[in-house]
Length: 455
Image (tube, rainbow, N blue to C red; front, side, top):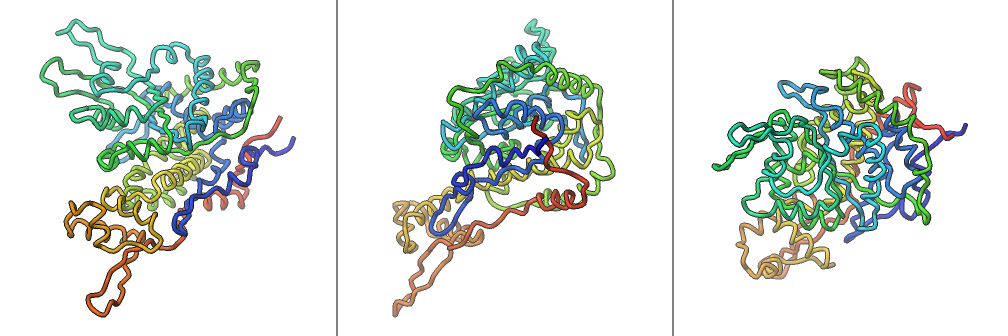
C-alpha cells in the first residue's frame, strides 16, 4: 500500500500552486497547501473518504466536519483558560476565490454524513437565515411563563449561511443587534436583549456557525467596525478553491458510509460524557513552546482578525481529541490544530492583503497601486476633494509607513522640499509557521504527517 499524500493529490497543477497577486513589485501568494497533519485521526479519514467524490477543497470539508462535531456533542466537553470556560463552538467562514470556488458543495456531503450520525440534530438543530440578534436568540430561547412559551429545550444550534455577504450587509444596518449576540454566543452562551417589550433570554446556548463568501464580497462588506469590535476574530477564515474537475460528479452516493458514520457516532457518544479536557505531558511541552507567539498581539487589521489565536487553536485541538475518543489532547491533536490555524493565518493575510483597517489609509493604498511614480501630499488631499484635513492624512500616511507599506521620499526642488509617497517595493513578509515544529517531530520519528494510506 503506497503512501497517500493529500496535498500532492489535490494540487498537481503547478500554475495554481504558485499563483500570486503582484502589486507594484509586492507579491501575496495564495496560502500554501495545509500540512497533512491537519488530516490525522478519524476526522482525517472522513476527509479522505469524501475527497475523491467532490470538487470541494478538503479544507472546507475538514472545517465543516469539525464544526458539526463540536456542535453535536453539546456544551459539556470544554477546556478552561484561567477563569474562562470554553465549550467547543467553532465559527468559520469558507472564503472562495470566486462564486465558482465550490465553497458550498462540501456542505451537502458533510450534512449527509452527520444526518446518518444523528438525524434529529441535523433536521431540527441546523438553521440558516441570520437577520437579527432577536431572531437568533429565538431559536434557542428560554421558556417564558409570561408569554406561555415553552421555549427550546435543546440549546445546540448549527447556523449555516451559504451567502454570508447578505449577513454582513445586515450587520451594517444601524440598530441591528446581530453582531453583539453572535459575540455573546461565542463567549458565554448566555444571551439576552434589552428591548423594553418582550425581552428575550437564552441560557446555556451552544451555537456554531459555518458561512460561505467570496473574497470580493468579504473585502467589500466586512466593515472596519466589525473587525475591530471583536466579531471577526471569533471566526476562523479559510481560503478554499475547486480541488479537481469532476464532469460527471463523484460516486459518494454509491458508497456504504455506515462504517464511517458508526465510528463518528461512537466518538460523539463518548464525547458527551467528557467534562474538562486537558493536555497530556507531551502536548503541554508543545503548548509552552507555541503559546508566546500565539498570544502575542499583532498590530493593524490582520492582528485584529487573528487576536484569538490561542483560544481557537485549543478549541480545534479538543475536537481533534474527541474525534479520536480521547479526553486528553495529545501531541498529534495539538499539532493538527496548529497546522489548521497556520492555514487560517495565511488565509487571513491573503484575504486582507493591503488592508490596514483605516479607511483613509486603505484609500491611499488603493490610489498608490495605480500610480507608478507615487503621489504627493497635495495629490492625496485632492483625492478626498480636500474633505480630509492635513492631520488626518498625515496620521494615515504614518500608519502606512509604520507597517512598511509606503515610504516617504523627499525631493529637492530648490525651495521647499517636495514629499512623494510611494509603495515599499518588497515581497510580502513570510509568516512564522508552526510547520517547522511539526517537521521536528517528524525528524524524531515521533509523528508522521502522511496520515492516510491509499486503499
